[in-house]
Image 1 (tube, rainbow, N blue to C red):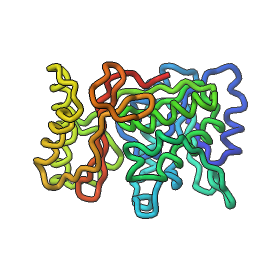
Image 2 (image 1 turned 120 degrees about the horizontal axis):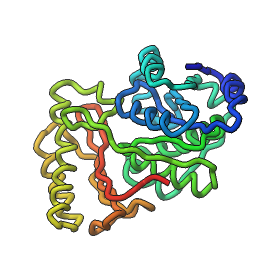
Image 3 (image 1 turned 60 degrees about the vertical axis):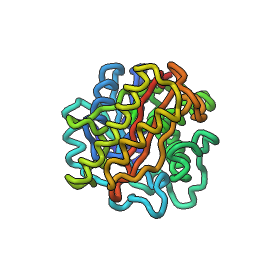
Length: 283
């Protein structure tokens, strides 16, 4: 695996690719099985598998966890080598945002929904860095996880609106053995907090059971989720929402094949997200 730490070295490494297809997995590192499932699919579907590790400062608000975001580059490198990754791009912050940088991408409307209500700068940073990385890597396919469903929807819209020549693949959520969706931030949780956090996937499971039984009303579905989350005082609800996939507009009833049920909670100081997808996000 070749490791590039500058844009110049990345460009040089990719200059001899020729007609080989490039798959790309952008990450912020501290890799887990969810990330590695993306890398595996990328490896299967492309001639070259490229991964980036970059903790993007533009998507963190001043009061968020940029400085303490978990990092373990040596472990990440070992995991990617085991996955037979061809190229790893690991730039520093100044490489992506040099002095005087002022250009940002906004996907209006979509970025203001769901997580955007409590993290108003977040998706501007996500869209900007992903577009920059797409331009630098030039992939035919890019891979994202369903856990960050709003992020995936925003990237899909950006790709469509800007006519970017990349296919976005969104792969299913990977869960730990206890049902918690895998996330780099799970490391923050104490054992007691982790047990409390399990009410989040249970709440979504309860919603899925209601839908299976024919319930379509958003109020009933959100109430059963809220009741589950209220069982532990360590869980503080940020939001529970049922929205349409293409525009994240609130729904009053499930639209088969076109619905996202999403929730965000705080458990202690850790913010967790999870969702139930009734439809297809890839393009």
